[in-house]
Length: 294
Image (cartoon, rainbow, N blue to C red; front, top):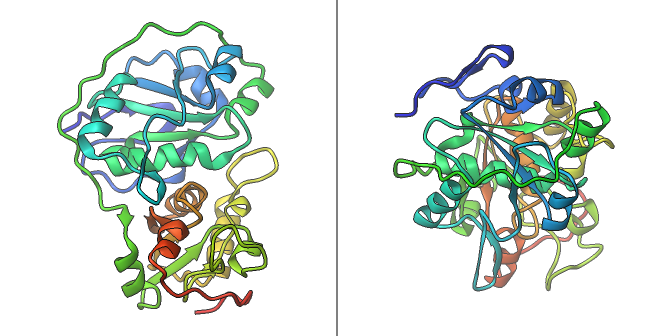
């Protein structure tokens, strides 16, 4: 079992067996990170490019590029790595059983950080990882220094991962798209949901899905919207108290933003990792009506 990680300033109740993480645990501010960046149990992950990382990153942060924490499979672009590979990748980033992980974006692509957070949740670190609200831009805006030095490599040590049931497949989506207590969410832009623009053959949306574009969960500064705003968005997409959300997008990246937002307001989410890429490859039915209904 992982040891409790007690960080009083953020009230991070991270003992094994605790309740699901709250918004205050899942999202931290630049001020909090500046105060706790030196904590021995903290691992900071910079999600971006090598060039961007070298030009300036949060001191002590380690680079996570597109080659880490996701794999491609036949007909699928973005998938969670198998457990043994994922464990080795996390250990290479310095993650150990007692770690708490802070993830931030180099750019304004909010979904890149939330995709890493989703993978961490699958790996059993959902209550042991947080998003830096606003990413690198907010860190700089707050006047905190960046570094061009790569920290010394630290190898983490993990017990076998306890993979969590966060990923669902096409069969699950088919059987739950209109099931009571489940809400299927299409996280792509409305033009793709309605089939007005096709990225893939037969574009439109999965029957029974509601539209909640991933860009609606964060503001123009790349910060997660307030709990009240997020609850209103989910309610507008037909999500009722106690419901489970199953989100998808084109390949599994954008929908991670909706999944993360759901977690911060107490909604239990899962992600169809194959997403519309897998659905259309299987030649399953789609709808092209732009009216989000169930």
